[in-house]
Length: 357
Image (cartoon, rainbow, N blue to C red):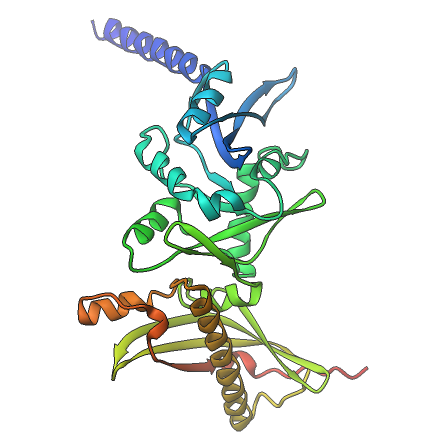
């Protein structure tokens, strides 16, 4: 009797597996979405995984399909109808929007995605600069056959090296934006020949893109949100360079004594000492810390001035004021004071490098 039960269970598992396999075969797995706006129409391009079986092995590739519509819902409906399979969106990793979308139509996109139960909000939202988002998503290469995977990999690598990108998912950004107390930033992506690269962060006011930060400004901004992973800053001595790596940052922004107080506490390692400073000397270390405190304070101040000129409150200064007084204020009217306290890791600075031949 037990043997018959076991055989029956194995049979049920077998036929269930076949059923699931057949269901998966009928799905077009969407990994990336590109959205443009041109000629008064929305254009949607989907990147879809394609299982291409060969004689010896199978390789995973992707293809794209596009369509347009007078509104975003119609554009998605039209592109879905072009598929010979059912579009499956839960595995979407990136959504790329053009500058035109970012400046004038992002609210329509956000509203559609938030209402569409088929699209999960756990993806990266990127802004294509100096090209269409379709041009980005169709940049498949032999070494990078799935553009969405390539972009995610680049984001993770950039976050750990250059520190100019934002790795917040769509859900987090929308929660911040809908709060109406703090503006957001989005990572920009552009195409240089056949290579995809990230640029400075795009800043927003409500649902409209305002400007694009430089790489240096993006790194400075990320000191406030990303805890300073591998942020490099250099000090020039004559014609030589002294460079530190920020490995830890803690920021605090609070309203006190009728002003916004911005505090940055940073930990840094020395990674390049072309100036031949004596790093064993504690007075030298203190002098370098003072120089970088001044340098970084100046960079933070320039960033804030730019944000005020662009009217984009990505540091959440109004939110800090609101939490104190329970009413909003134009953050550009706030007085502020910046304090930077950088400490150089002395244990990591005990070795001297001899540059003489």
